[in-house]
Image 1 (cartoon, rainbow, N blue to C red):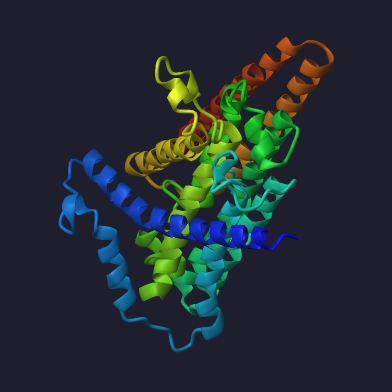
Image 2: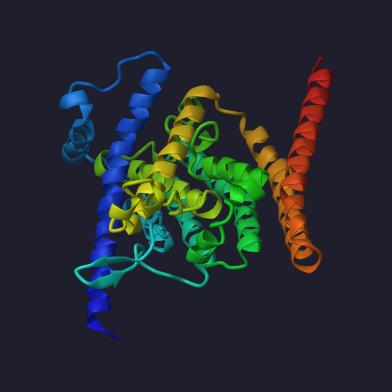
Length: 381
């Protein structure tokens, strides 16, 4: 094997880590600014111009903050748990294609670290490891509130991973491959969000629960659990949990963009009248820009949901995952398979059965849920 490949992989890996850490820092500022605007507040504006140095100030504060370890805690696992949580969040981004192949100093370089034939299977396997970090953090703290938060987190993440996995299946069926680049290339004619709108919507809901974001932030319910599984953590150990959550938000948004929103595909700037012919050198670099724009839009949606929806009750959260999302994703996977089969064997127009049946399945599910809630409300009277 050419030794320059190892150098290329190392450089891309280091750049990916630095981008994720920088993205985590400024995603916190982005969230605070957006929430402030929605809640008619000012938001961070003291540290640096427009508050741009606030993430750096927060990092310095956490670095020098005193770290405490409970006397009866399982110290090794207590220290290991934040690492187990944050590392998978970064590693999973290795298979996400951020753009097409570009030329750097005459060398053709791919804008992703690894190209696996089973990229989606890799993502499913790695993301499941983070559950152990949160669960072990709650158990090792020797704190009943932290333990309850860890149990809640593990039950919630396992439950919603099933719906998330079947959302992956819909994209695999539509693309005919588990390779991330193949899934993006299959969307050149049409994004999968058009063919499977309900599947994309379910995926976005499941990702909120997977990263413990509002309204699914039950493991961190401060009114009940005094911060939940990380109640005993402080300083940089707490910062690692904080980092893991926000890096997961970025990565899960990038995965959603790859699976349903065309990935690095976007308008061809070489077709712009008059100046397009002068932009051919820029065209290969537009992929990361398109991914960045789409990811920011999805992150804005996550922040918007946090500012809008209240935390739901835990029993309803679990019931929603098992009784609503899981059957719905099974139905969506079935409709996707039927639509693709009919389009291949009968007529290509049958591909439009997929969005039609998925929307009908979504509305039927909403109707059944609404009917169930009305019955419970009537019985409670």
